[in-house]
Image (cartoon, rainbow, N blue to C red; front, top):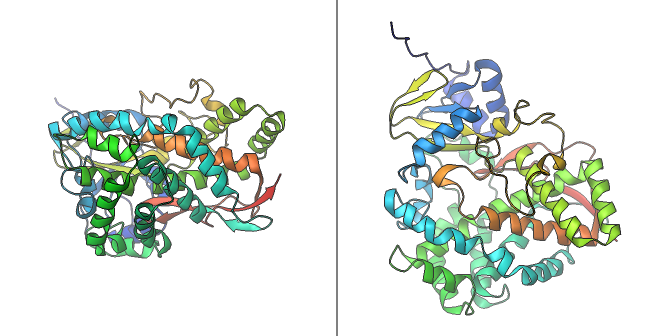
Length: 427
C-alpha cells in the first residue's frame, strides 16, 4: 500500500506573531522552526501566502534544480519590477532569462579582473578618509565604497555628473530608515526601494545619462553590446545598479565585523600585513570573505515557486507552492560545517586561488543556486575583497564592543545590528 504523504508541520505561533518575528528577527524565527519542527516546516506570515521552509541541503539542491531548469522561478523578484523594468534578467522567465543570463554573467564577472588596479586605487583613496581612533558604524561607509566601485566599473570614473546623479538617487533609500517595521505590515511584501521608486522618472534620466557619459571600454558600453537583441539596455543597467552594490556592501560590513571579533583570524591578517606578502594576504582575506558569507549570508532565505509537484523529505508539495531555501540554517548545519559557530576561514582552503566554492550539494549558497543564482557573484566577492584589502593594509581593526553583533533586518538583507561598529587604528 502506498505511503501517505506527511503533513507539513507548522510553528505554534499565530500568523500575526510569525509576521512580526519574520520582520524583526528572521534568523531567530528560522532557527525556532527548525528546532521545533525539523528540516521542513511551514511559515504563515500574516495574510501572505504560506511558505514551506527547506533546511537540508539535499532538498535545497533539488528545489534549485526543479525551479530553475526551465528558466522559471522569478516570481519573488516581481516586487522590483517597477524599477528594473520588464526585460530585466531578474524578472524574465524561460528562454528569455536563460539568454540574458548567458550574455550578462561573463561581462559583469570580468570587471573585477579587468579594472582591478583602478578599483584598488579607488578603494584605497576612499578608505583613507574613513574616521579613525574611535568606534564607528562602518556599514554606511561600506555602502559608499561598493557603490563607487560599481560606478567606476560602469563609467570608468566615480567622479562625474552622471555618477553623482545615480549616487544621489540610490543613496536615498540607503540613508533612510529601512527598518523592520515596514515588513511587519500585513499584505504583499513592501517595495525594497520606496524612495527611489517614487522618483522613477529621475532614476530613468540618470540611467540614460550614465549610458551617454560612460567611457569607452567600461561596463556600460559592454552591457550595451551584451544586450543587443535581448531586452532593454536601460533595464539591464537598472538591474546592475540596484542589485550590484548593496548586498556587496552588507557582505563587506559582515566581513569586517566577523574579522574584528575573531582574534585568531585578526592575528593571521596582522602577520600577513607585517610580512609584506600582498598575494598571501589577499588570498587569506578571500577565505575570510567566504567564511563570513557562510556565517552571515546576506539574504538568509531564498524563495522559489514550484512549477511541478515536489517531494521534500517525505512532504509532497503541490505545484505553485512557494518554498524558502534557508541558507542561514544550511550554513550553520554542523553536519555540513563542523564547529559551525566558530569563524574558521581555513575551512575553505581547498577552494583554489580566488575562486568561489563549487556547492554541488548546496552547502554554501549565499548567492542562491541553480539558474537563478546571482549572476554577478564573482564581481561581488571581488569588490568586497578589494575593499577589505584596502582597509586592513591601512588600519588595524578593533571591535567596538565585546560581543559580536546580532543580525537585524535592513530591507531584504540582514545586516550587523550595530552597523558594523569597529575602531580603525592607523598603521
